[in-house]
Amino acid sequence: MNSILVPLDTSDAAAEAIGPAMELADALEYPVLLLAVGDVVVTNAMRPVMDSEHITAEQALQSYLGQHATSLEGRGVEIETMVIDARDPAAAIADTAVSQSSSMIVMSSHGRTGAARWLLGSTADRVIRSSRVPVHLVPVR
Image (cartoon, rainbow, N blue to C red; front, side):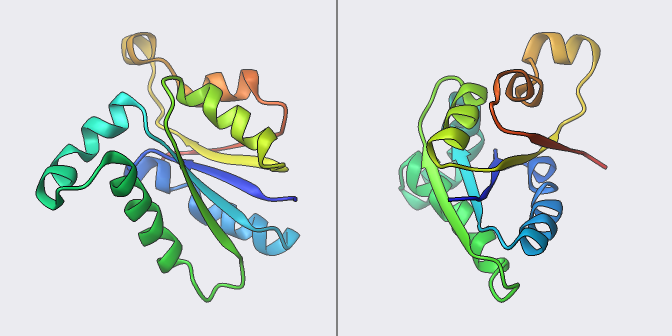
């Protein structure tokens, strides 16, 4: 199945990749797969929602993806969602692209440089280096 994989980490920056992915999906007539990887950073970011609604990290992430999928309805592109739990988001994204037969990964870069990039790493950079499918990187504005 040809699809476009869009990894999201609950940040506004990551969500900026959705627009360009939808444009490509519409032009290529491919479905879009919204992916959330439940790593420690993402789970911690979702903690207030999880605590207030008494739900698991997976449920919070599925709800997050569902909100995006609902907002994209009616645009003529099939939207699928997937939540996976992994310690290494970059490897999980690259592996999911292969296992789901995605033709492309469309993701944003948070634009970290210098010490922040060294300390936090760059998931986008690691995906680009390890992916067996093309990666379209959307700069954060």
